[in-house]
Image (tube, rainbow, N blue to C red; front, side, top):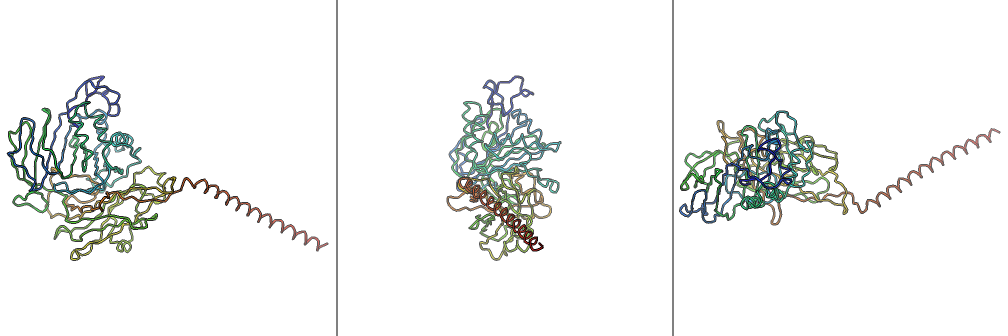
Length: 528
């Protein structure tokens, strides 16, 4: 994560023989490669948790002060040439690559990071000029960085409708990933220099992050890595390497004059380490497509689940977050291939109305309705449903039901298998006023799976998930499967029944044949 990586090089770096990411373990530490990166650190706190500017100590390229209760976001920007050769080669074959991870636990947001996605690992990808996805190489990188992931080739990805929505990527992949412990170990072992305690400490802190974003596109030609930590006590001690540009912001929400409905206002202190002599006060606003709706939702499966479980969403309010513009409530689901939705069932308007659903806005393709789980390579499917909220006057909790279906799974010893189904992302999509322009926001996330399915003037108001105490944002479903312990008995019984049936048929045929012969002999005797 930090400034240096060490290798033994067979040639001057970078070159064709430079070590690849997956070959690093075969090299010994010998030479340092400086990473001339840019680092932005943002603390976002409530008004009552602010720090006095006089308590901050700025000395050269270091900033220190008292601990602060705040959210923290770190964003590191790297030029493509600053990355290991294997990753350079992989990214040069991509037009876009976005990797998103969100932890499967509910957390509160007070800063401008309101966007939500279903928990787990999300990958959105557009291949380069050739147009042919290099899924095998991508999957190899994912398995190396994130651990055992069911990704093997391009067949593991679903195709996205980028022909209809130009700002959408071409392919998507998803995996249920509980934490970033493997990714943290990967960074410490293969990215950080041996003994570089600061880099290793940063990698270890990723285990406690709420979310991680990695972004690359050919237009910017840079890689951006963003990580967000929860609202808690944060140490205020930052050091910067001389070859890096480090910017630190200590912010809180505010309302500058003439703040518009699609904007967020902040105020606080900004400083560039090594350039400024003291933190500078600032007040500014910026457009944001993602905001926080003043409501919550919970998700559960109706009991008994059976092979056709129904996911019930309970929303605390039916009141839209904005008055005037058209707003509609949506649920975006990423379903592992063990469970799926039937697009034909969700095309019946009368049936949808009975479940408080309006329509199926999108479902990824293909979705095989008959194939068992163990014969498929595809990761699963994603769907976008518009929910049918009651009238705004009835501002009370209400429910919607989403019918789903389980696939046949491989046998297990106890006759059951557990699968994890992530909670959906629930949000209001509101149309901004004509003439509204969303310039680049310093904090907005893009390519979240659902944002590419809406127009560029859409505002997203996110409904917070609210699980019960002790629960996370993965729902466990117990699926009945073939019991391996009883499988032999079932096989023997089946074979016995088949054999008995065969013998019964033979006996019947023999009885008929013998009866026919006796009748013929009786007729001949009568003739004589």
